[in-house]
Image 1 (cartoon, helix red, strand yellow):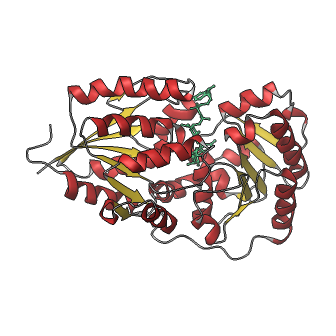
Image 2 (cartoon, protein in one colour; image 1 turned 120 degrees about the vertical axis):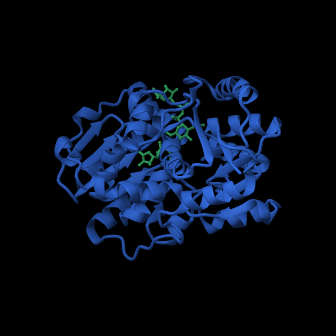
Image 3 (cartoon, helix red, strand yellow; image 1 turned 90 degrees about the vertical axis):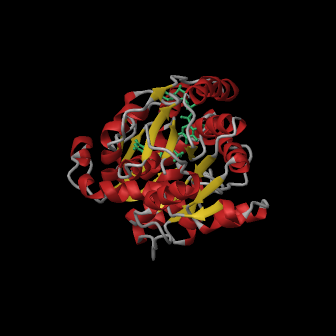
Length: 370
Ligand code: UD1
Ligand code: UDP
């Protein structure tokens, strides 16, 4: 018996999710594993660097789609992915997360009758103005097997009428990667290079269109950042979407005392930076989860989260997109600390192994790997 599998990656948060899957596939001689990179993200610091940092094998193909509005980007990925599946049909296509590459490739494979597995399924923000929520709902509706990270996902899928046989609780592949690289991150010199003291800075990331695409909101968030930076050094690695929007809003970050900005960081440096922070302030999905393992308090600058377990364990607090509330809670945590924090169940470093074991059992066909 053998398994022929294609895994899809396209944007930054996909790479840390496919890394442990690629290591687990690599340990099984009966598996032929190929990675297709859609090219949704393409800058070295949003893509290429992660392949080196995370020991991910070279993609079999890169679709080089680049940036475009949602409809065009999704369509472009679909039209470039379909011929690859016609050329060399796998037993299963694995998609991760909730980006445009996820739904585009799931839809192509599903229409061709190729089984689809969705890693990090079932998360719901219940906010359909988020492009990711649409991607999650549609991908879960068509995927054959749904690997989930937290109890809320099981409930959401049950509520949507999903057959429980399709749902498998596996833990969190992003956490597998964090645990694999945490020791290496202790050797990073990122805090020295940025000139911030260890264990006393605040790390901030922002890239959700709901926060950064509106000029008034961007300015208010920068005002909040300025206030926080007067209490503790703030490090702000800037996502390319956000860099463009801040420039358009006419904001000068260089003049803010205590604020250190930089380009997006590589995985190990960013992990080291989070691990050495007193507080994380973010609208990222992945950072909310990583905060739990690092036991660093996290304030999520959104009105909702599709990852409620991070709140349940006492690590994450939703402060909404209201900067005044974010500042109030940040002040409290910087003064008093965050209180008791826990770690979600099964976030133990073995999620990818569970997923690959299940994939092999479900989808292996006769024959030997090519
Ligand atoms: C995408 C995902 C989002 C994810 C985020 C992670 C969707 C709908 N959105 O959002 O879920 O949280 O990635 O970072 O899939 N750009 C560059 N270089 C790059 C990539 C992008 O300069 O390598 C710029 C381009 O101007 C582009 C903008 O960033 O227009 C936004 O990129 P895009 O992939 O459309 O969305 P993200 O905001 O990155
Ligand atoms: N990340 C990184 N460098 C940075 C910022 C984030 O390596 O400068 C990592 C972060 O640790 C997490 C992932 O990127 O593993 C999260 O991706 P992102 O915030 O872009 O997307 P989201 O999780 O919101 O979809």
